[in-house]
View 1: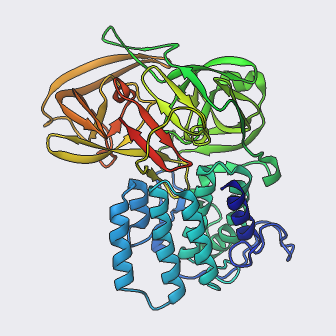
View 2: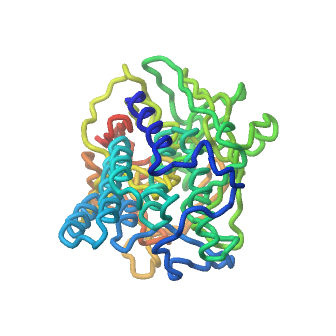
Length: 467
């Protein structure tokens, strides 16, 4: 699979359809010079956020990208049927829009390779409209953005960096000139800004035994005097031991700011939460850590955020490299020879740029059936957390609790309600925690969902199970 993916990426980068100026820049024009003509980018696609920035977000009127963010394969199937019944007048645009829908289905089902292949094929068939040197349009812009997101989720960092730099050259400059907005923010791409050339981004390498394991709970969460298991373990960062949280709800991992100051890891870019347009939004440095050891497995050149925490975070980018991952509330095993029996297809929610992603698993309670995001970094004592815009009308027991965590004390007002839960294939009588938050987000399966159960996943196989 690795060889076929590399051949696929080589073909895409070299092909005259999508990346004609990716490596050579035959016209020798300086970066930022507008090239291809712009079509079908209307003024109403621009937004002004609360920080006064003019932003442009990859979007489609059919709801494909919103279904991708929700991990809703069923909705994508329905959208595809509607596209087939009512095609537009330009065949090339139909090809690209159908490909976006099919690639989104591939990603929501955990099949990133299939998504890549779909995009590659569509870009060939949709020429010349797929070539940004001939036309910068919403269709090839969305496909290029989607492809860079796949590359990040696939841990192909040099290719991801190259894709981002290509989009800067092929799309950003023409759009800035077209809209006459020098400070235009491309929301889905500018969450990460690279400060080094493509050659400055090193590939991820992993080496370890065929079967490895780590134990959890070098520290615990204390809630109302009761200890709650945390997905925490000891890792080694360039020779320095540090506590780390295994968080399936985060793509990129994180390292403590204090360790960055002492180790001086190479800064390769910055990351910011551009979807949070508050004045207080801050940028954090991105570094590539030369050596990260989990158990007896060594990761080299992991891309990680420098965070103001006392512990590290291991995210999906690291976990996705591993094979046959099995987590319980006591520890985690992984490796090609580690015991593994999960065969159910994974459901993945993600944004188009690949910076935000999480597994979704089915949950049932009180006659309701929903998909819940798996976030082992959430150490709430209840296995299921549901966000509400207000708790005023929510039935249950009011609770004001202080959480003693590795980052300090957290105080939260919540509503707790006991009920029978079915969490994927695991049945349990437990409480649901209702907290104030974004009610459009799916419920969250916390680390407590693993008590008396086991979580198995493998992104290479596209499977995830809670049993």
